[in-house]
Length: 494
Image 1 (cartoon, rainbow, N blue to C red):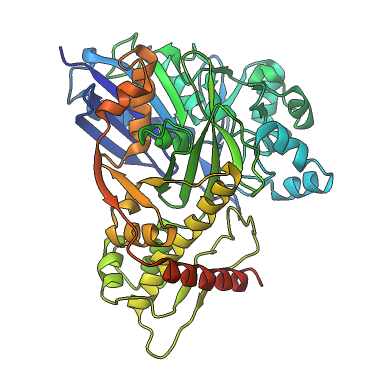
Image 2: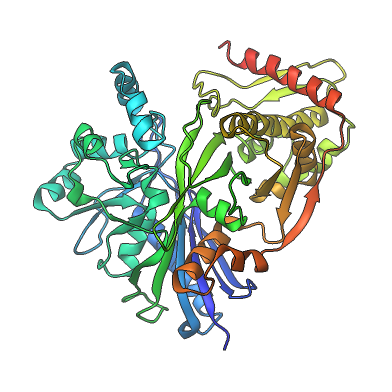
C-alpha cells in the first residue's frame, strides 16, 4: 500500500506544504505567501494568525490530492530564530512573532559585548552576540509587551520558535516542544550539555517554565488533533531548523560534507560529526541534529546576507532586468566581467567578516562597462562570499572540503554554479530535487517513524542531477581571489 509523508516548510515569506511517497516521488505541493510587517525601522514581524492560515491552506490543498488516511507522519522545518508567543491552553497568539531579521535589540547586544560577555555566550551556545538570535528578542518582549508579561505572570505563556508554535496548533495545544537544532539557535541553549542553560536564562530574565521541552530531532513530538483536512492521530515525528534540514536533505551525513543553500542569502553548513568544533574564524558552531539514540551531530555555519537578494536589487533597484531569470542570459552575453567587481554588502558583511558597517561597492568600471558586466559581477560577488566562508570552514576543520552540495532557487542558475566551482576549485553536486529544505523534513519525519532506519537507507534513495567541475587554472583563480580581497577592503572603508 502506498504511504505518504507530509512536510511543512515554514519560511520567512511563505509556507510550503508538500506530500511525497516513501520512494521520494513528489505527489502534491502548495506554496502560500503571507504578509511581512515592519512597524518601526529595523523591526520585522509576522502575524501568527497569518502564518497558521498559510500552513492550513497548504494542508487543505495537498490533502485533497491524496487520501489523508495514508499520511503516516508529518515533518516540520522552519525559519529558525524567529520567536513566537502564545497561550498554552488556547494556542492563541499573544503577540506578533519577532523575525530573525529584526534588529531592535542591536543596542542590547552591543551592551552585552561591552560587558565582556560574548566569549562566555559563544562558549556555551556556539553563537556570536547578535540580534539575529532569539534570547534578546525574548528579553525585550517580556519587558515591553504587557500581554506577554501578563501571561508569564499568570503561568499561561508559551514561548518557542516557529516549529513549536505549529506543533501546538497541530496538536490542539497538547504539545509544547522543540528539538535540538532549533534550540541551539536561541542563545539560551548549552549545545555541549544539551540543555537550557540556567546562567543564560538568568542573564536574559527567562523562566524555564515558558520554554518548550527539547526532544531528539527524529522522534514523536505529538499527534494531530482537530486539524481540518487531516485525521486525528498522525504523528509529528520530525522537526528541524531550515538550514540543518537542507544539510539533511542533501544527504550530508559524514563529517566534512558541506552544503550551500542559495536563497535570499547564502547559508553554508558543514557536518563536523560528533565533535563540537569551536570556530577560530568567527563562524557559528551549531547542532545539526540529535538522532533517535540521542547522539548529537554538530555543524559549522556561515552565512552571506545577500545572494538571491542581490539579483532582486538588479531587478528592483537598478531595473536592469524585469525578472530574476533574466540575469543568467544577460551575464552570459559577455565572456567575463572585464574587471568589474561587485561586493553585495547592502546590509553589511556576514561571516567571516561580521562587519555591519560595510557597504556595497561596484568597482572597476570603465566606459566600456555594460549592464551585462555588472550582472556577471553580481553572480561572481555571490560566489566570492561563499569562497570566503568555505575557506574559513576548512581552516577550522583542518582539512580540505572535497565538494560542495548546492540547493535553493539560485542553484538552478548554471552560470552561477560554474562560477562557484571555478572560484572555489571544488566540485559542486546539485540534487535532482533542489527543494532540499523540505526534503530534509521528509527525511526527519521518516526517520522518526522508521520508514528509514539509518542514513544509509536514505542515501539509497537520494538522487544527483548534475556535477559542476572547475574549469579555470589555479593561476586565474588566485588572481580573482586577490582582486576580491581588494574589493572587500573598499567595502569596509565606510
